[in-house]
Image 1 (cartoon, rainbow over the protein chains, first blue to last red):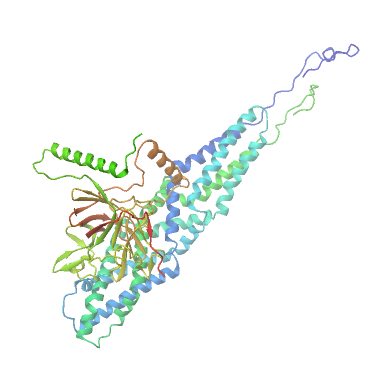
Image 2: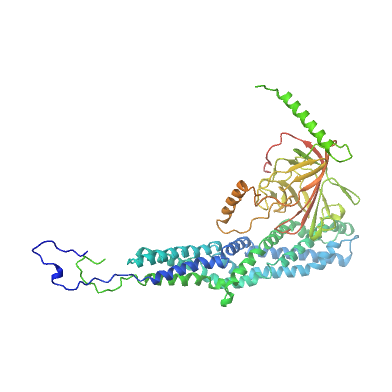
Amino acid sequence: MNAVSTLPELPAYSEFVSHLERAPARTATRWPFAVLAVLGVLLVAAPVGTGMFPRAAKGAAMIDAFGPYVTAQSIDGYRSDLRVLADARTNIVAVQSTSTPPGEYPRVDQFVRDYPGIQSDMSAMLDAIDTHRDNYRTLAGTVPFGVLPWLLALPGVVLTAAGVFGFRAAGRGSRATAWRATAALAGLALIVTPLAGGLFPAGPAAQPLIDGFRPILTAAEVHRVQGYFVTLVAADGELNSRYTAAVRTARPDAELGGITALEQRWQPMTSRFAALVGTMNDNVGNFDAVVALNDVSRPLGFGAFRGLAWGFAIPGALVLGLTVIGSRRPRTDLIDTGEGEPQ
Amino acid sequence: MIVLKSSVRGGIMAVVLAATAVLAAGCGSGDTAKSSTGPEQLVGLLHFTPGAVDGNTVRGTWFRMVQPGGTPENGPYMPNGDSPAQGGSTTLLAPGTAGGLRVGGYQSEPKPGFAQGNSLSDSITKPTRFFAVEFGVSTNPVDPQTQREVGPPTVVNNDGKLTADLSAWAASWNDQEFNQGAPKPPEKQGAQVAGSEQVRKVWDWVAHQWFDRPKSDAAQGPSATGTYDPKTRAFTLQWTSLIVGGPFNGFTGVWHLEGVYEPDPATPTATAQEPHP
């Protein structure tokens, strides 16, 4: 306000100064807020556009589902089951080499014929799971996958809001400190997420795990393993209901330790086997979703999981940088206009 | 106001209904003089006749499991080594502790549902050995495999033809659950984005309330069908049910129930089994 004295004994300011010089109107730096808003929109658009929300949820479901199977104890149990089946087959072959019991036993014969292939395939599957146990543990130890897209999108929303409102406030000459602080917090969250969530070690672990599980988690493999299951249960049924009794009748002194061990182990073995086949079957789609998510960044020359941590950290660092730019008051040559203290 | 006694009102209603039925029959174009009572709900117990085999012929109540790619008529079937019927292709079933299937109520799976893999669901059918492990049948408000809400079994008789909603029919074997209903509830809900399930439920409710749309988890597909003789109350019911998900994904159950219907107007809405000791 240009106060003009109304007292008659005092001269007016204009009597001494011919030209009134006003301080230039101050505007805070606005472009960092525009960039923040763009970054925010990108952080929201990225998980939406790449289908990360449903795919990450499926990845989380798959990691949870395989938890009981990707342990040393579980894998040892399955290997032990395969050995019991192999011993039973050896027992049957030994019996058949001396004298075949009367009658037809097509399912036992099929078991004898097919089991080496079954054992080989199942062992390879178990080896693959065993090889990638550490990678699985690393991935399972990260922040839950289903939450990851939210950890990008929510800071994105905050940054968009901070950018838009900060831009408007800066246009009015304010330094928009509150919006800068809000954006800085969102940026900090983006940096902390990969560090606290274990995303940096998870990146290198994901690709080998995907490669290792790729041959296992297909509809064709599940169908093949179901066929193994049919072969095994049919053979056991025949052993149980007719074969063993026929051998005992024909040769009371026959050594049937392998078959007996199989019968004793049968129920828990088939329960475990059924559970594994069921988990494989139910996660073929989830695995495909994980692969699709990883391939999103293939055009850029790397898998998405490898770049995931940086996908948080780089925007986070950018945001922090942008909040600093323009936070200090721009230097202007202030001229005392008699209007009181500068704001 | 004239108040009629309920017996008089009932009599008048009966006469009116009978006259309507006679008129309806008279208006029919058929040559037969068959009277039609229209669809009627059967509420009570479907008491099962135990399965039996005579040579290569099976009677009574039984089950088959078709391998993926097979057909209910020709198989190939899972050969149950514990069954003497048709080379193991058919598994004979016996009535459980309740004598069979209760229509209009549930016969729920006990908790726990298994002992060393053997099913403890023994109300509908007696647990039956299937590859050395016993399987059982139950009906539950929430299907154990799909986790979908399903209604209790219902059976409608329409001039000797039965149509049944057995979407709650569930088999359990070796710590595994398989929905074997007809019609089928949708498969188990897959992984969902946080919050989307709640949104879906709200939309489902709105669509059902105001737009008369069926709920998204409503059972779909063909119902069980069969025959009914009102004189003897003898019934048959049969259906096929594809297993969706789990270790036997793609296998198909073929079910045949046979026995005598026992009307029971006082059917409980739910009869959960007591837990086994």
